[in-house]
Length: 177
Image (cartoon, one colour):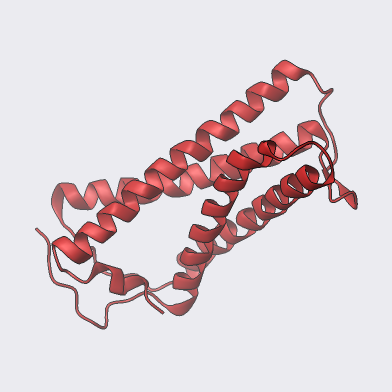
């Protein structure tokens, strides 16, 4: 059963900011991950990958902050749905958090295994021996998590848009500033 939202039902400002910052970071990281190797080898490509790594670390910080905020201070709203739709929405949200976590952790492992140098200024300590097969495997898990995250986030966004514009339950108002 879908219910109509009251106009006052929206998340607190910090929760909303952390949500939209996460959306932007995930989108930028995914696009950068898909396109950085299209840049010819050299300082520009190194810079693109450096930005990717720095934003990945920032995403880790935002994710930890988001989880801590939600657990301690974030406003809890009543569910938008009940029954099976509620369960699906809850599982989707958990999947998003888990996939962001896996993408971030596998990205940090990837950078650490390689010993990545950020902008030529700071080096992520290398713990691997540079074995190409292991490097490809770590990178493969990172790419899989990132792609699964984008698909899940896309479904999440489509569901939110469907709620708001098809069911007209004003669901998107929950995430407004």
